[in-house]
Image (cartoon, rainbow, N blue to C red):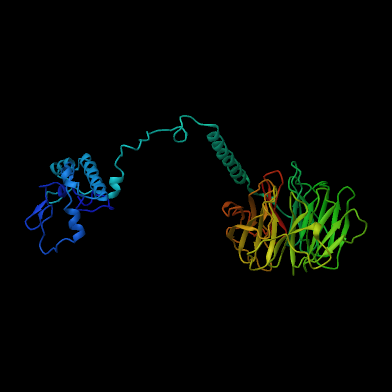
Length: 492
């Protein structure tokens, strides 16, 4: 019966046959009362084990004289042995053994019926209620009906699940067709912007040669038209959030505003230093923060006559590639440089070298290509680094050091002939961002802020190049990707 006993208890002392006086093994030719006979060359049992085997059986426990001299621990132990013996007797193992012998299922030479420990675990216990088959109501334990707290929990579960279901359906419905591909600019796409209109898909693209291309992908007659408002590569573009008739574009030397009402590209800011990026500090788009490749940042006010900045300060960066303003707290802006990614408060910028950051996003070992706040609350920041990592930070609380939420392995080695990747957030989603990919077949990947890959946009027949720069429509399920030859691809 060794296999029928729990592993935590002895194999001999707990066998009913050995505990019963006069039972098998109770008396041996050499062992005396209560001791098993020695077999062959077996050595005598150790004292501890012999004492265990010499303890009285279940029938002896009923007699007071049999255990009155024992300690409380020994009485408790013998009580447990008795209960175990009753439990195994209730299993009727002996009867099962006899049935198996009669049916030929057990050899007559087998000393006992063998059961694995896992099989014993599956036996029903009288204290555990049995779950019936078929559908069951979702009611918590010890409750006869759902309470308001249970309903609130289930409603939360349903709500967050519906958000993901809608997202998956939206991503799956967006496809690329051949008629939605067009060469818009002459050279490599360096920046893009999409008009917020819900009736027409109007996309603007800036290339390496200073050209700005406009394409109405819904109209076949209008086609794409190219303008040349800059002398160098157009590294950043935005439609004005308060007046979409204005398209602002930034090149190495100037920041211009394309006013469609007057059909002119106004010059807003000119600098002797090479400019890299800009973003609006206010909803009315009157003021903007502009970064320079050599590290400084400038504050520009469009209402001020002239092309000089209101303020130009050193933030301690050797190089600044991108700047991005917090979507809720407009006084905060995010700057990404060589290996530095920091959050600054524009209200405390001074013309000194004492401009210390409010928060630092650490962990980057090589140059950072971009860093952007999440679009709704700004509680997340996604960065793209040359160490082949996409990192997501929790910026809910802007303390001195920001917590890293996830680090995603991603091939960011675009080389010298492709524009570096920039991970951008979906304006409609707080926890979803997109980035180009070097993988084959060519694709645009969608990640969750947890690091999970949600979806990949690809079309083996229509998309055969890397889309380094991407833009998402603020209210529609529309994605536009630009490649190094000036072509735009519209997934809708």
